[in-house]
Amino acid sequence: MRTITGLYDSYDDAHFAVKALEDAGVPSDHISIISNKDGKEDIEGQGNNAAEGAGTGAGIGAVAGGAGGLLTGLGMLAIPGVGPVVAAGWLAATAAGAVAGGAVGGIVGAMIESGVKEEDAHVYAEGVRRGGAVVAAKVQDDKVAASEAILRSSRSVDLTARRQDYATEGWNRFDDTADPYTQDQIAAERARYRTAPRV
Image (cartoon, rainbow, N blue to C red; front, top):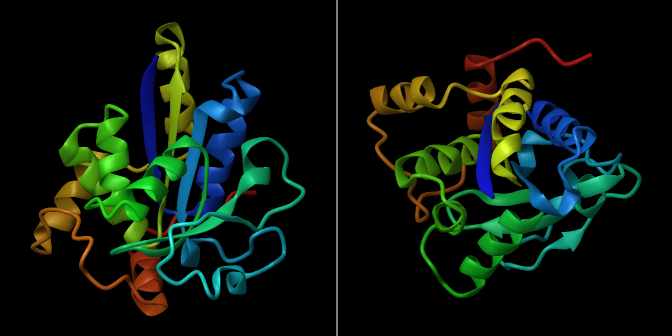
């Protein structure tokens, strides 16, 4: 088994990637999604208020209802440096365990543990901090190429280019002690990388 990952600027694109992986036969329990709460304006009709009160606890509470597959298990989790996220799957559970245990960088540590290079894990975590979403899947070796193609076709971010964009601002790694991005900062990031909405 190998872990494949994709970073997305919108929850909708990440959602599309999850559904496409499921439709291609990747089991739901092999897929994870972690999305900034403010990157998801409407969680099954419940709006941003679904995460109110998420605080700094590590527990995941269910908030979604009718989606099917992995997305029926969406819940809320608060991650240091990111704030409230919408999450489901094994990566979210690993990150929650790291947060509960006091480990540094819940998302970063969880991704490194799953086989993602450390420098990439920091970009993924920073992307979520800035309003994005990450999708990760464990797939059989013979399904890696097809699964990676699915992630790319779902409008995943070019990780090298994004790392360079962040570096031009003086960023060099995810800081779990930093303040989470505000809604205004997330809106500015979205405007910077805006893509046409998915139809």
